[in-house]
Image (cartoon, rainbow, N blue to C red; front, side, top):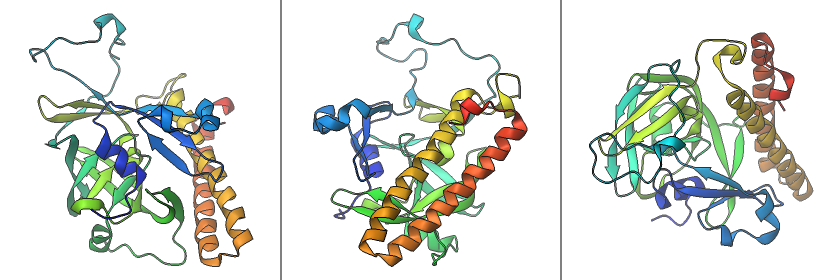
Length: 286
């Protein structure tokens, strides 16, 4: 196995869907993940975030009794859009799904809703005709032993079964152990994900519904707030990294980070315009 593995890939390898993970950020802006809270340095523990993978269901008739009381389950939303059922392939603790990239390249990707981004390997990037140049934004990614700058690209579309999302952010990286890619929240975040390992399927319920006073643009407060929080966080991390590279006079890295800052600032501007048109309250955008 290759020496350097992406932390977000390690999360998928180490934990089955639904496992509890902890996310923390050090003083350099590096994001870390662990399933053991005792490994988090004490000064970072108060700000550590708990994260869980997609919910896994047990269908009626499955063996064993549920450990969760039915009363603790939230009532189903009657207005929720119809979901898309997608076959799953399981290998050990990993779940894979077939994806169609840009309408022409098929791959089997690991499913991991705990990963912020979708990952594609370099061979897939070549097959898609993606090139990396001086204008490509790079973002910092923590590996086992280092922090590296990784190219960020936008795929025209990703289709999983009948579910399709356009303009999906993805990171290009050499995947470990011949894995072809990872389906992360840049795609899965557009859906409520339900995994049914007994029947070997994943159901994707679109989070966008009909616009209403409490769902401007068809999205609820959590979706809008999460999107703005994500963009503000990335811009903050990149600005800190920019300062570090300026001190080191690391011109190549500085150029890549500046490209990333411009990219996320443009994204933030686009989302501000969308939010204004949809009538999203300003306190949802902080």
